Amino acid sequence: MSKQAEFAVILKMNAMFADLGADELQRLSNLCHTQHLANGEVLFQKGDPGDALFGVRRGQVRIETGASDGSRLTLNFMGPGDLFGEVAVLDGQSRTADATAGETSELFVLRREDFLAFLEREPKVAIKIIALLCQRIRWQSERMEESMLQPLPVRLARRLCALAADFGSEVHISQEQLGVFVGAARESVNRQLQAWRKEAILDLQRGRILLRNMTKLTAIARNE
Image (cartoon, rainbow, N blue to C red; front, side, top):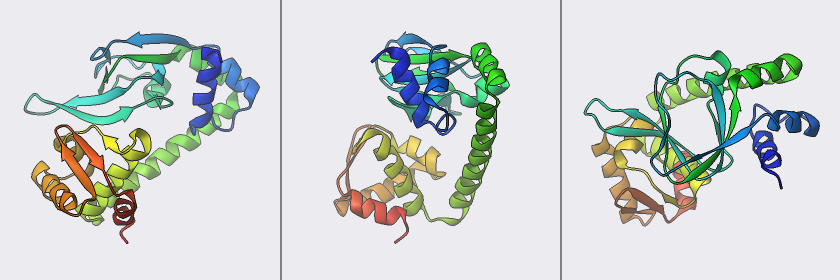
């Protein structure tokens, strides 16, 4: 399979492009090129222009921001098959976070000028993007409601289940980063994780969490 064909598959898995036909996906994927990153290499920094859409072919990219104490906080992980940079490539505004390779990575890159020219030729894609942005607004509203109304165990279990869906049962994330995800102090996150460790739901190691009982964790996430 050619690289362009691989990118077409990734596009097809993304909500923004899921309704496109094979020919349309192929035309769009033909506009991409690839970029290699070494482990720890910065792809872009907060404030850089949003001039491209990225898809992960292999490797991992961390979306990060700086904490007030000078440390780094990971906001999200992007693995093979994930797309990111959709908003910036649409509005052309500056990046709102940093992107750094978590390991040696290869990315598909679609430049903003090529993407916008494609949208002018394919208006139904633009309509699909409008729907996607509305979906994101709804998702943000749900997350805000969740952070206000759902107890910490539910929020934490939902986040761990989401990470497991992307990266498997071994999740590489710090407790401080989890706290940022769920809107809780590190100490509160640690207490809950320790309680789950005693129940054999998970195991804790330095910088990673091993999920042992996904059935129980999923039940907690569903507030059952």
